[in-house]
Image (cartoon, rainbow, N blue to C red):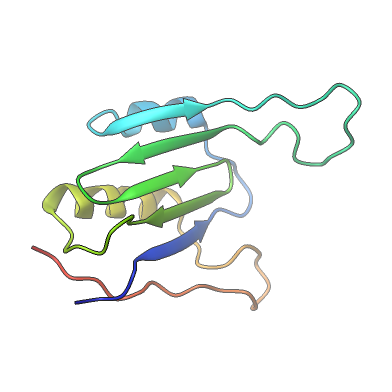
Amino acid sequence: MASQYSYVRFRWWDPVDLDKAVEEFSGFKTKKIVRKAGDQEISLYKDQRDEVEVESDTLQALLSSFRAVINQKETKPFTARDMELREKVLKMYPRGRPTPFPWEFSSEPKFEKE
């Protein structure tokens, strides 16, 4: 059996519209998480804290404006719905590293399909 599946994907320039992402993943269990920023906070990312949780059969994805984290709580073969979720996330977040510079990349772990 494959090891624990956890994979991070990125977008570089154009953020994901999370409201549209909820619509895009409407065939899955979705939940939008809104995190408020403080009035006196100084942060470049204070307006980018919202996230969307998406779940299929055994796979979960946590989507933010520029990053997606895909994982399984328990190692199991991917179902057809898991593969559909994975493909949609990989299409929406096409990069394997957080910047255009050639460092800090992540590679997808091996997984099994049903």
